[in-house]
Structure formats: structure tokens, C-alpha cells
Length: 326
Image (cartoon, rainbow, N blue to C red):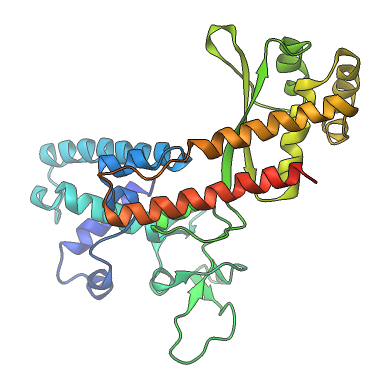
């Protein structure tokens, strides 16, 4: 969530026609495509099974909670230049969206603070190295540095990199989904069942040694190891390493416990290795099957974004499946 200070400062400045920031504020968009502004409750629910659903709902709840708190304070304590009538829900959401889509951390004293940087916020995203920076000059002044990512033609839109961000973050904070995003990440839950050899020991000791989060299922059904995977071979191999621990026979568990992550990268013997690959394959296939056609009642704009988000996330699972065949 953006800094509340920045949101309130933006509202204050927008209420003052004589503000020195008025030309900049007047140039800001009146609407945004991020879920906080553009999605209905049905649209938010349609984001599932993507992690974006939970994240977008949490953002909406946090925004509503902060708004209620600030609205109550403002009506009890007058703030010069910020009339209570200005703090409508629509105005607050607009200011929050401006901050969410445009804020940057800049030096301030011994720390940092959130700020809006004109020009930067007018550049669309393009994958590539970071070519912008904020620092301090020798005399302590804030210095903003911007370099072109490449040679741009006359009249061509200048772009910049928003950083190594998965599509969930790009959607929540910028309102778009990037095709073939090399930094995209998705959830993959591997199941450790009670029937697997030394299951409890594996869950509590072996996986714990390599700092894996293990969640016990209700009803003594087993455990879930929640992973985050991307479209890299290394990510798929890491998931396979966890699965090797899950399916390993008693005689293999000691080697895995002693060797840690290094031993998890080594294939098991014959049938054990096939079982490990099956665990990852079935987990990835389950996730792909959770993606359904976007339900009726979803707005057209949201439908396009959600559909693209889902297709891009399925690509990551399909890459994991492809890695298992090599």
C-alpha cells in the first residue's frame, strides 16, 4: 500500500488551485485500470485461482479501512485546506491509485520517503535493465537520473523498466499484464501424504532443514509444501527436489537429510524418481485445471485483463511440465 502521507498530501494539493503542483496534478489520469479502481466484486472473484484475487481483495479492504479511519479523524479534527467534503470515497481511491501506480522511494534525511516523480510516471513499461535512479548530490540535494533504455526514434514513446515484477504486481499496481514475462511467478502446492514413508519425519525434519514451509492439512490427511515457481529450469528443478524428499524410501532419507539441498538435486533411483516427477506433474496439472473460462457478469475490460493474466500464468505451469519431460 502507498504511503498515507503521500495520499493525503496529494488530496491537499489537489484542493488548492494555487498549488505549485497544480499543472502536474491536472495532468494526472482521472481514472485507472488497476483492480482497486476498475474491478467490481465479481471481477475480483474472477481473478481466482491467481494469487491476484487474494491480493486485490486485501488491497481493497486495506484501502477501505484506512479511508474509514481517516474520514472519522477528519470529521473530529479539522485539517486546514482539506475540507471534509473533499474526502469522498471516489477522491480517496483516486489519490490512492495515483500513489500506487506512481510512487517512488527517494532519500529523505537518514531514510527514504514516498514521492511522485514527474515524467517517470508518464513512461510505459518495457522489459529491460533499470535506467533510472534517485540519489543525493554532494550538497545533499535529491538528484533524479534518467537514461534512455535504447535509441528511440523521433515521435516514438519513451519507455522505462518497472523492474523485475511478476504479472500479479503489474496488474495490481500498474493495471496491465505483460506477455511472456520472464519474471512471472505462480503458486505450486506439493502434497505429502500420510502414506508416504516417514512422512511426518520428512515434513518436520528433512524439509525443515532446507527451510521449506510445511503446512499440515486438516483431518490428518498429510501436509502441503507451498512453493513459488517461475518459468526457469532451476525453479522446476527445485520443486522436483522437494518431491524427491516426499517420495524417498527409508534408505534414501538419511542421504537427503545429510546432504540437504545439494542431495535433493540428484535424481533418485528408477521408480522413486518417476514418483517424484509424478508428484510435481500432478500438482502443476491440478493448478492448470483450476483456470476456467472467465465467468459471466465480469466487465469487458476486466475480462480481457483476467483472461490474459490466466493465460500467462498457465504458461509457467506448462513450462514446469515441459521440464519434467527432459
